[in-house]
Image (cartoon, rainbow, N blue to C red; front, side):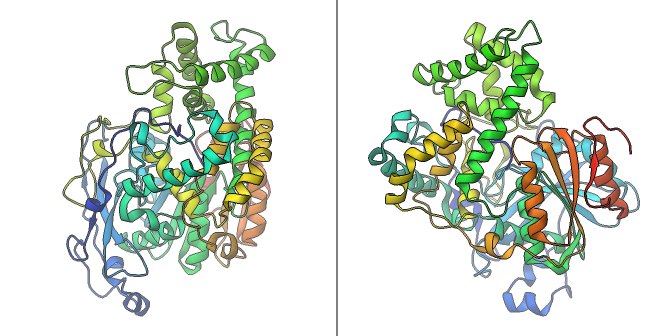
Length: 538
């Protein structure tokens, strides 16, 4: 898991016709190189994908770094029928500056996070890796420019079935809304939706590996990206190179448990933020920590009861504020900006600062603009950057999480458990509980997810992999790192980051160095070694 966006339809545009983002086989496949196919590729009908040659060129769009190159990678829509429809994935790279030994592929998490704009924005964090690698990122299927899924916009959006809290208290109202929401999301997302889960994304990674010309996959995955990396390692154990999983996701807990854990972690992070905020005279909640925490709860409930009109679309509700808070809490570097946005909201009734956190998926400016409704897909398989639906991150987040989860409670089970779940989530967090429960409930009415992750991703026979767990991580609890390492078996080596924040690579110099040393030189720290909270060396 990583950042979560609000599930309301604010700042969202009409969905793209996803069908137009799919191409028939042969209608746009890249140039194929010869004599690189295996017998298995031929048997499965995948050789035309694994042998494709990537055509890199300068990235288009305002603010794109001049040294960042972009391209597309063609993959089957359905790996069970690779001779039928295909789709393209947006990929980008910074070229190796030193002696190139291959590529390292990054996944920034989500699920639903677009890798190309994130690499464009945060590429400087990975420049040391270009001493030996092309540093590559991508928009996974259904995400960003890669046939983005959507649930529509406005009052008919599939992400707005639970805007009123009363629906969560009445299964007779709730269940029909959830079914309708699932149908609306399917209608707006098109053919990619049934094939958006992590198992298919892992197969895309292997197509990418071969198209990049690498015998083994070198990989750095953050948060949800750790789930993708683990699934790849289980699916292709002989193709694993140097793999790092930072902010390790769970492979076994059902979504109901994941949501509650996320709510608890975010509440701890919120309490830490409030404790920091009240030390500043400019804190909009005063200087008493207990009173300030109560003021946050009151603000959320007040906005849910009486939403704030905005100039950017639907009114700003308490749940929109919860989404914005969730974005701002993932890194202490964002706390000053979050404090200013909250002061702007409390003192002036201006939600624009909070909307900046809510709208972009990471509270960071995208390197390209997002246009209002009315745009359409480009004639090729990739959509134009400005035409990515504004609800793509939450739509993809729910679609992928649901596709990866085999549990689908019946209507009777939801009815019986709803009151208990509401109480448990409220106890986990009076601020984030309802928001997190809504995310979990949105899987109702969707097809059952895969059993592969829960049943097959274990006891791996791969080269050693480095798992980084952060003690104060608000999204992926440290215990998930320990549990996942035990599940993966002897291949897993744990680095204990005794710091705060979500993931360690971008916040700890010690973690950053140890990860780079492993990826560049194969220098693996002893399992159980640690990095101190402010450690610069050692």
